[in-house]
Image (tube, helix red, strand yellow):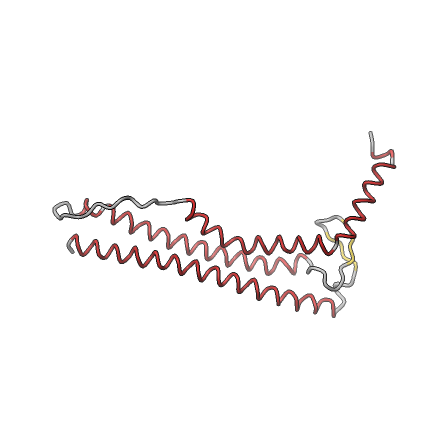
Length: 188
């Protein structure tokens, strides 16, 4: 193979891998958004089923808040039911991030090979191309964007939990503050 054929082959590989990275991001974001939408409806149905079976109507401890709260219809799912979907979202995000990283490494391999082409064909008149940056902030941020979906899902759950139980939480805070003010055993 001559230098011209090698250069054309490398440019074709770089172009193909750059398109593959773009498609990988499109498919990853679309898959995660679709999975998030499906989880919303699945969680809604599971919540309605649990209320119908009167499992959510019982008084259950919520260990994160150290309070005994009564979970009613419309309440966020119990944490163990919620985390099943969140773990699935996180796993899919990890898979797409790893695949995008692998394709990016292949892209960088071909870019380095194109840059080193004059070393392999010194007798041919091969153009010297500027060096492509290997790892930039934007390339690492694009892989982190996949994790926005599970983090947003978790933050939305915490928000719903706080909003749904706001009156109970507020009463507990007021009671605790009132006890601290009026009970001398709280003070040294």
